[in-house]
Every structure is written in structure tokens, then in C-alpha cells.
Length: 298
Image 1 (tube, rainbow, N blue to C red):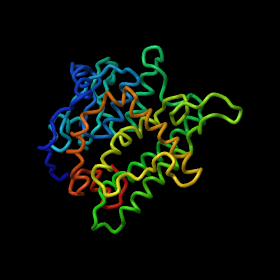
Image 2 (image 1 turned 180 degrees about the horizontal axis):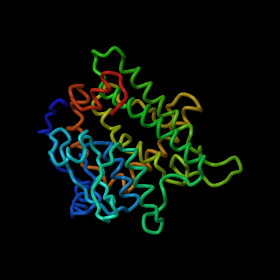
Image 3 (image 1 turned 180 degrees about the vertical axis):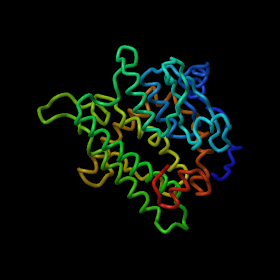
Image 4 (image 1 turned 60 degrees about the vertical axis):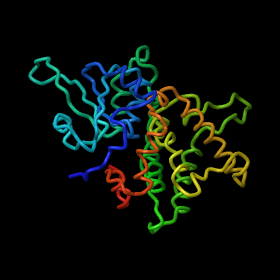
């Protein structure tokens, strides 16, 4: 059974822009997103709902004190959980709610299921099979390299077997690897400058899956000695690194300004409170426990 986690310092509901969005989607609806406002994996799914303009109900739960009704839907008790209305068997036509979980599964389901471009906007994955597969490769890099690196960094304490410099260098190295896959800017033929996203002008699921942790990078500056460590403009030390970090800043500035990202964000001070135990490495969340053990994140 998951360890009890004290959430008494945290508001029970979203605040700021996220509170407005949750209130706008509080009415009963057959498609329900169960989430916790402070969870970055939930924010991934929430961003996709916003980007694809999907009607839904948002249901805030405390994932550490789970209601029996929620556990009946998803015995694993993890957020996000999407309750999807599906037609029952025997030709009855009745709809029952079936759960989906794992943030990437939910994101791809929503992108596939709500595919009317006139109503839902453009898909978050390219139509071309190669480009679609390539996006999935780099989604995997974000999920299995960058995200675990974030937790290894923020959970560093002086007692760890690795130094904070090692955690920082590894984390920033994973970011650089991703950034090098982004269009660099103006083409060799002098064409127009590329857009800010992973695919250039097109916003995609690669951008979505990293966005919640990009928004949380300020927590490393807040809590960790030496901060995040991304060099300021002109301070990267060599031309290649300068270009990489300039491209990162272009992407970062665009993602934190994206309306769907802003709409799903609570007030900054709430995240400072929520992540204090991560910074102290005392939280008993499933992600934190996996990070301590060097295991794959749940």
C-alpha cells in the first residue's frame, strides 16, 4: 500500500488560471479527467484536452487519499485517469465508463479520438508515418531521460552517492540531446526562420510531454545550490553550445507562453510548497520512491 503523504500544506483545489479552467469544466460530462493539480503527468493530459478543444469534466482528487469510487474505476489509484464512455456489449447501446491511465496513453487516445480538425484543431502528431514515429522516439527520450533526470536533480541531497554537479550535468545533457533535434533556425537557402517548436512551426505532442517540467524548472533554481545551471546568453563557452542553448531559450519562451500551458497552471507559490518534500527527498510519492531506487518511473 502506498505510504501516507501529508498534503495538509497544499490547497485541495487548483488556484490561479487552473482554478478557472477547472471551474469551467466542473459540470457533469461522460468524459472525465481525474487529476491532481500539482501533478505534471496530469498537466500533460490537461494540455491535450485544451489543445484539442475536447468537452470534458475535470475531477480533482487527492491521489494520496483515494476515494473508493475512484479506486473502483482505477484500482492502481494513479493520476491522471481518464474515464471514457464506451458502448457496452450485447448490442445494448448503453455506455459505460472505462478507465485509461498513463499520461502518454491518455494523450495519444485524445489526439486519435477527437480528430475532427474543424472542431478539435490540428492533430498533435504528424500524418507522415516516419515523422510520427520520430516524434514517438523523442517523446520516449523526454519520458525516460529528461523527466527522470529532473527528479534525480531536485531530490539530490548531500548524502547521495552522486554529486549535485553530476545530477545537473546529466540533466542538462539530456535536454541538449533533444534540442539538437529541433530545426536550428534559418535554412541554408536563407529561408524564413523556423518556428519555436520541436517540429519547427508545428506544435506537437513532443512539446506537450515536456511542457509541465519546463514550467517546474524554476523549482530547481529555488531549492538547489547552484540552481539549474543553463548558461546565460553569450556564456555557453563555445559556438555549438551557444547555438543549442539559444534554441532552447526560443523553445522555452514559447512553451511557457502557450495558452494551454498557462491555463493548466496554478499559482507559482503552490508548487514551491508542493515540491519542498521532493527537494528534501522526504516525499513518499511513487515517482520519488522510484527515483531513490533508480527504477523506471511509474
